[in-house]
Image (cartoon, rainbow, N blue to C red; front, side, top):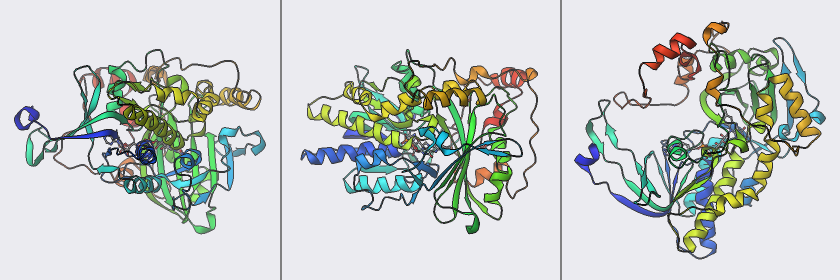
Length: 501
Ligand SMILES: Cc1cc2nc3c(=O)[nH]c(=O)nc-3n(C[C@H](O)[C@H](O)[C@H](O)COP(=O)(O)OP(=O)(O)OC[C@H]3O[C@@H](n4cnc5c(N)ncnc54)[C@H](O)[C@@H]3O)c2cc1C
């Protein structure tokens, strides 16, 4: 291997290494440094971020609940945090192909009310968190993906190694070759976001999901638009359910009015959908043509595009959070509250809880063991309470939109989320896909390049850059499966579900 030829790798030692510079990772770093300073202790913390800069890989617009941020940095307003647009109005619409039926706000469960929240660019929030972290002495390394987990002789995580740079498509070093580095730590916190590459390895190796429900996922597709100022209403938040998806398919849209005449519009489709002909990207394009939605966009211009996975399993799918030498935080663990499509506050809170446990352990002279205080603190936190109240949302919505909305309405409005039962996610998403022979092909309209677009021109706007001569990062475990199974039985659904074509 290249390591045998060019190794050994350089090593750097830290008290805590954090993988991923999103809301979870940066909040953990900030909390560690704040609490260490309060105890007049030296503590070395570094954050590895694979994006070329902080925020580069964060999908921009979001409605943010400031609760956790206020706990982390109580004077965030004075420090200029970019939470500039308070939510001014909530609308929840059930769509049919032609009409929109608005749910009266008094009938909306608490999870769909956004009073007190802010419409933000999450990328800007992350950049601002990065500045706060750096001011506290956190070392941040953008452009450095953690590629490998390092274990000590006892099997505990002892850190991570960054990937080798300057490797060609053939796997051989180019003239820009640089061997990766090892970052060793007393504790390593993994904050890669939903379905993280290293997180998945940890879940498997330490059987962290044993006895938990399978994780469930959605694919979220977003566009940022600059719209006609006459149609812009800063702080307006619109969610929809229904058309263009059928009653059986879990999903819905969001349309958030930010500042500067910008709106973030997006669609989430649950990956437990049944019809292999469904294309989440095309459903999103179609949704924008609804009369109630297009009226905001007409005369406007699309600025950017992006897509990401989102975890939706909630409390029942939350893996064990700790293992020897480290912990999972944020969406890497799956803290997102699917009933609110919000995870940034949960990411911040979980980062803080893990940070407190790590600092206490280091102060006590420990390292490389399980941070049991973190799950204990989570169990006593408002985050646990919030996820508990929301726990039946996804299992109920999996029963279809109308039944799900009715059941969840009762669950929230009558039982206030405290019903004495917990429904489970019976199976992993992929098991629900039906053979193509049992399904109707879906014919999607051609893009008009005004409101609706094709995937390649969209990917162009996603700011994703890969060098021509770099190793292919999506590889098939078994190259025969796409033809013998995916194509033969399911009409090749990967041609449709991939938002990057
Ligand atoms: C379509 C969509 C809409 C959403 N809307 C909202 C909303 O309105 N409100 C809300 O609160 N939340 C929303 N969320 C969820 C929110 O984005 C996440 O909950 C939040 O970003 C999670 O923070 P995180 O730090 O755990 O992970 P992320 O924000 O995903 O950050 C992970 C970071 O780690 C980096 N990384 C990953 N792997 C590595 C590696 N191996 N090495 C180095 N770096 C790595 C990534 O580049 C990234 O910067 C939405 C999500 C989606 C997909």
